[in-house]
Image (cartoon, rainbow, N blue to C red):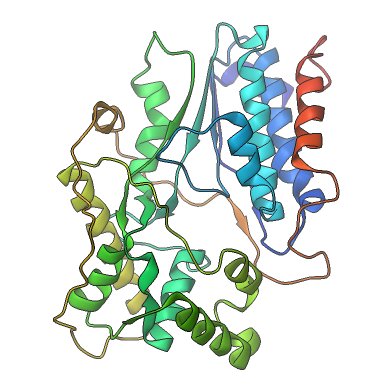
Length: 351
């Protein structure tokens, strides 16, 4: 790696091992230690002026959270989510280190990332599509989620936000966290499937819907798409949306919905989703709206630079004896270790 240092001016860290059946300790090397090594390289290399970390495992938040609130929400996360949380905390610690005083560090927090409106190429291992496939199979959805906000954006927009660090640098901002808050109400997602596509999806009380879905998973066993993620489903009680919705322009709302439609069509063509039997003419109604008044941050996340990126994460979906819980070491203990190491980066050859 040393001989390539002078040829590198920026690092985008978008890699991780995604495994919802492994604990924190099993994922620490690939998801946390790799982040540390890349930060050390960036700190020690004069030619590298920017480091961008793409976070994951947990959705962004439309409300500002304190560090303690953020840590509390992370307690009990899956091993994967915990490893990404601690890695993000490590990046935040490096923001304050003198080695990065003249460099840029940015953390990108996206929600679900799906295929673009142009081609709709979806990742068949993503939880969101597996959950939708499961709902289509039992012909029902969670009616108590309809007013919740689903953070979801297409890959081209996420790539625009990432690359804007280099294509549209802001000299006034050295370090920051960019949350990609694009999305849609879950009622709008289900309306696309019901009204636009023609799927029969009956809104049911949460307990009835979840019982029906879990029963189908257990009946079909390993052949069910959600079987490897059953513990994730049970842990979150099947709820995937946020109570807090951000403001969003009509343009962003339209792009998100077009991307969802393109992804659904791709999944139907691939045979991943059952072909719809016919259109349901009755749209779902909620008290919310996707098209909230825009804010200044809406335009901040818009870029004319277009880039299609392929997945760099290693996705493995299987249950094993390691379980899905975090390790015995709490997140606070891991954060303390990170804090201690980031304070002693002298010399910059060990952490």
